Length: 290
Length: 300
Image (cartoon, rainbow over all chains, first blue to last red; front, side, top):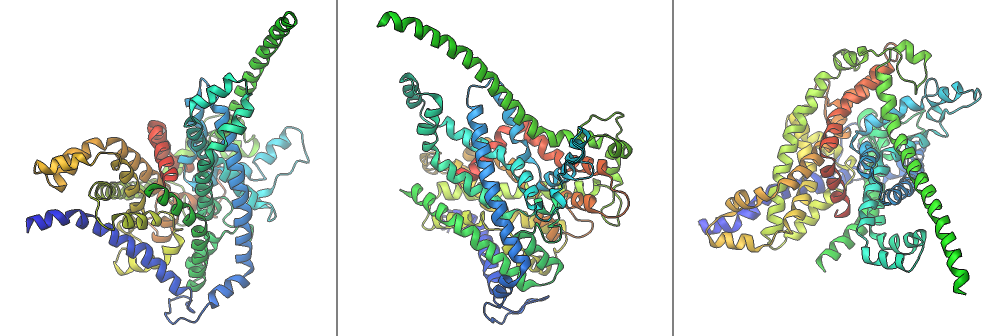
């Protein structure tokens, strides 16, 4: 009896967590998927009627804006954060004496809540007393910078704040990557008189391909989940101008009382995440098992 | 040939040395410029929070306060309005504490045990279980919000702090397990085998061999979980009600409350207060914070 117990203790320890994940992750995804195929409004209904919710979603101009915004925000956020992060990492990699301090400064926004980031940038970017009035105070009377309240440009303020928050993190990733490149190869190249720029572009950066991939995955994941930042910075406004799928889902679930729409939009979000993450995880896990 | 080469090489070396010094200066100038860019919002937040409303309206965003006042901080802490209640951030700050401490402790404990089992007590299917748990880290939480709201209601935990603790523990398991599993997998299995020969059991081995080795990864995990849970907004806003909201939700309500004059200095003081615990952790243990970030992404 005690031997049997001893043999099965590990499984029994893991079991509650595993059961919780099965139920609260996979079971809940199934539930949401089910509801997305019903006519649920304020309360869930369980009769499957087909893809009516997804058709409503595709026909909704607000959802259309949200998906467009996700694309604009996601693309700009990922590209700018990567370029800035890589540039900072390369600059910091030149045997800088104050590297520790600078790294701490570049990375601290990552420790902040997106609500704090949004609040700060909302104040800095507000047209009345923020940057606009500072530049006007310098004598450029006709300077306007009203992106925060301009429906055509408001989404770019989300990019500004997002890049500010996440680029330091990309820098840390790339810096770790630069440091892991084989010293001997770099020394050999230096001895051969190859210029530093060329060493970076031909030797170091190509060998960091996996880090580019991880940075991309993390940033894409952050972009799709971005919810707090938009809520704190623009509240989704002006109008619906800065809605993202995450804020659309939340509005449908908790203020519009349209559970069917909330469920179907959540499922679309999950599909987008999975389309990006699944191939990555699959290759990672396979590489580990080889 | 060599007669001509020698002086020109000397000249070019001389030129490249001045060039290098100029480049060095440019490098430092660029680095400082970027540092200013990252520090600017923090600077603006701090200075704004120390100004009076009058000075904010008439002065410049980037100027230092002419007269430093801590009124905004006092208001943010104990008088600012989050809707109809005007008790400041204090009660919500305490909510976040009461929520984060048990949630961090529990999810770290479960993560350590799970990682220990998966890395050292391999059995058939353990890898599949690990993959399934790992996957759970990546789902957008929107997909579990609706059913979770119903389940919390059924358990009688809707709108309560224990309910929020429960949610954070469940959805933190994937990451905490990942951290400990990756740490324990590098410890040779011979240790467990030898201890078993000596008659030590599962928990005994964990307690007297693995736990004492785990301090670094415990620090990484605790910092990661604390930052995640303290900064969370989505679960907080979805599963709390008036009185049980965490600090991020209260901050957002203060900033967006429409009653009365917009008090920017109070908003900024409140934002700094809400950010202080995680900032403090970052300054004290930045090394571990970064390790968690990179472990969560590179190895994810």
